[in-house]
Image (cartoon, rainbow, N blue to C red):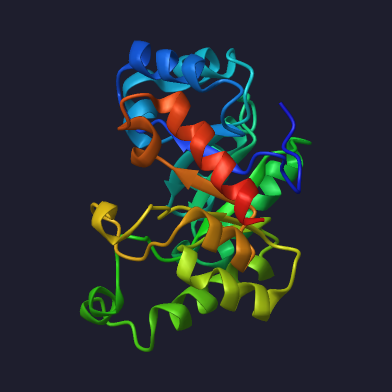
Length: 238
């Protein structure tokens, strides 16, 4: 299914679980409530390409979030394989470097695919002191911007960043990069292992294109109702 921009419904629900039957059940319950679904490492390792095809059969855009990070040739081969799956977006770590990112983009282009490649900047589970322990200097926003520059120079379509970096990235790079934003929470108490978070409305107002929302929907007693309520909240805030 084609990925539209700007989206009517910007919410991609993260179905980050291994169980195929449970994932398919959630996908069916969320049909018409979200703009797409995200499948991550847990699901892919447990179910592989056939599992992805099964979820794609529910008719919603799929974001396959594998965060590829390896030598350029290996990543190029992986992207070529992903491009043959019914997915609209996939991820690579921007920290893999420009050669790796360029190889991924060339592999995608060589397939004639419309797959969107997104570069993950700094994981939302990290904050400044985590980066300092890894020898990185400056603020989180500084590091996100450096990685974004590398990714966009390699021809990558968009970036994955926390909600807190959306406005600085829009100011620096303008409207062209696709910004896909996890770390969406209703408040600090619901942050879980994510450290750089904000509300869905604030992220969209700052310039996000798509919002990746997991536990606020999937852990709710009625996931479909939670997704519908979030979409109403976004409409009211617009």
